[in-house]
Image (tube, rainbow, N blue to C red; front, side):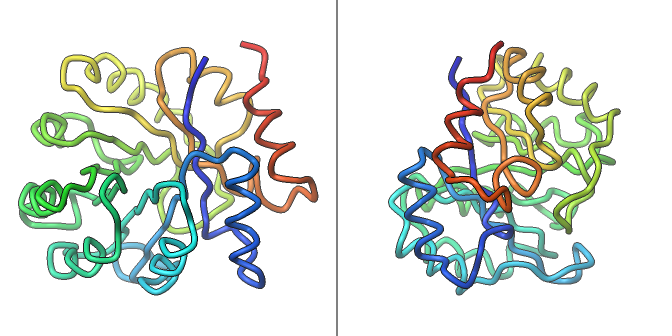
Length: 220
């Protein structure tokens, strides 16, 4: 069974970031998940535009950029210009007056458009955007901090999105509190990929390749 694994780079060791990127790529990571936070849309500051630019300059694998910022349309060109064709940008629909305008800019730049859905956001409120995005990132925790607990009711939302993804032609990704049991449950149901942070990947004192192989070898 194939599913993508993305490294949540806000959890990486910034004392030796280039080495982290190399080890993750050699270990088999599929992409690098970049969390940009402005301290307004979420009550935290995380990675910066310059962090993203650096990772883009070193990494060979694609970037998966998650903008947790107010009014991303005001600054979207800064991110677009630092990325490569095939990279992804997710925005939060609630953060923008006209999110489809921002998504169209991402599409025009030949990047992959995505939306991120908070635990409290209903599928019905983003239904029209599901027709134009290629990826949907489901937040299973409230955005802003690593290491939070999974919110069980999000599972029903994932089930609803899985019933729509073939008709509307989007891929579905999991972000937050991703443990092995969640991959075992939701990968067979059709979730296309998982963002790995402190629950499974980082801070384990094991080589990334060993950890990632263990995830790939889970018994479904």
